[in-house]
Length: 125
Image (cartoon, rainbow, N blue to C red; front, side):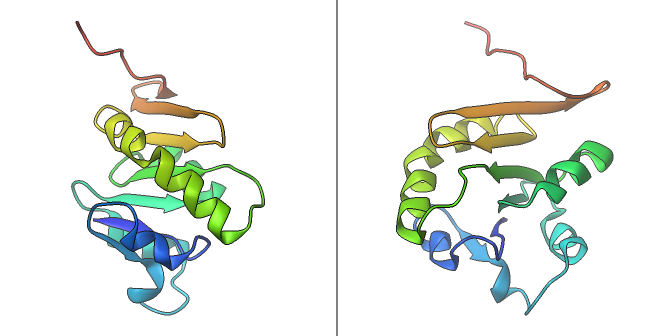
C-alpha cells in the first residue's frame, strides 16, 4: 500500500502509475501514528514531506518504507512534476532500500541495517 501523506497533493495518488491512496481517504486528520499503522504492512510505503517519519523509521525500522520529499517550497504543479519525474527510479530504489530521499536534482537511498540507517549494497553484476 502506497499512502500519500496529507502534506502532499492528494492528486499524486493517481499520477504515480501504481495503486496509491491519499491519507485523507483513510480518515480526516490522521495522526502520524495512525498513518504509520495503516502503512505497517508488507510493501507499505509512505510518501511524505514530514521528517517525523524518517525519525520513526530510524527507531522502529520497516515496514513501512518511507519516501521523504525534500524539495523545499514549490507550487503544487511543480512539486507534482518533480515527484512524478523521479517516481520510476524511486520505485527501483525501494527494492533494496528502506528510505528514499527525493530532492529536486537527486535521489538518496538508505537501508535499515544492524547499525541503523546505511547506504544499501550495490546490486551485483
